[in-house]
Image (cartoon, rainbow over all chains, first blue to last red; front, side, top):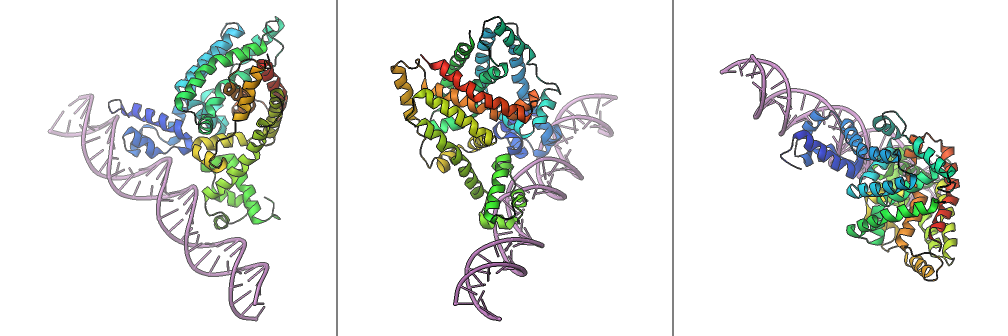
Length: 201
Length: 201
DNA sequence: ACCTTTGTTAACCAATTGGTTAAACTATTT
DNA sequence: AAATAGTTTAACCAATTGGTTAACAAAGGT
């Protein structure tokens, strides 16, 4: 809680922290108010209700993620280049904000429609280009015949899953935070080369 | 709700359904009672409180999963055989109970200690054997030098992640349940051959 | 100085929810 | 059939929680 910044900014910072940690249902308005160092009524003065506050944070968090991903997916690089970019950018980004994937998955799980409505503004995300590119590089003989959907699923699975399962992984292996993040940094390179090796002709 | 079975069995069935769907915090005792066709007080008569009821279900659910996994991991087959078994068994199992992975991850995330305490009975899970086997097959020249932890992470990531992200995947792609499960059945084979291809010498 | 708008608080409210109590009903034992 | 033990219910309770109200302070405009 930074006392000098504006009340609204403090609310947003506290709400983000607490929503990320506990999700919409787990978060308490009182806790957010406490963390921001204000009265609960003032919270409702700035953000009419919990839903509205949550939506603000949810959109903010997702909007830090998706655009970068879609930018890479829709760029003009050759496929191998894209995969390399994606893995390092993605894992690097998640290391900075390791709670975000679980937060997003959990909340999309609770209310799938909110995602498409609030974040995608009713539109579906742009996968056509990358899928077309995969099919084209197959035709050109650069990569082996591959189901584009499975390929995309593979890349994303390998990058994100360990962060979703982090509490379990660390609990079960006794790994420290430092160990875990070290493993993940090393992983960025490994995932990338594994994927490329598995599809190159 | 099957009227003929015993009250306790009906409670367990209802509790399982509702806890799997909404997690410990999201589930309402009243909803479980309603689903089981009984009074809420009777729920507390059979299971003293929510925690106790939840623990019963949690242990039950996890115990249907882990033993099969560890049995495969600690079997005597060669590595490639094990990987094949693991992928088909694992994905096949999850297709039967697609909510289980998210349930487990979410609850371990909420209280990591509960897992090691209630399910692992205080012990850490047995990964030594499979790790030793990986290192040995590297030495024997059967597979390429590989970080065993990363390899295990890869296998598990590829198998489980799509089920965790299912609501997002289906919402975003507009895939039907049937389409999704068909994709997952096909995936079992793909994941397996991709993994083996990526490590074989 | 006075008034209006904006920011902030303490106290309160209604709904939800996990859990309890005491009574009633049912089956079993004697 | 009477007593006992086990099962089930309606009504209730206390704590939590999202949200509201009304009063009060601060700032700005005139």
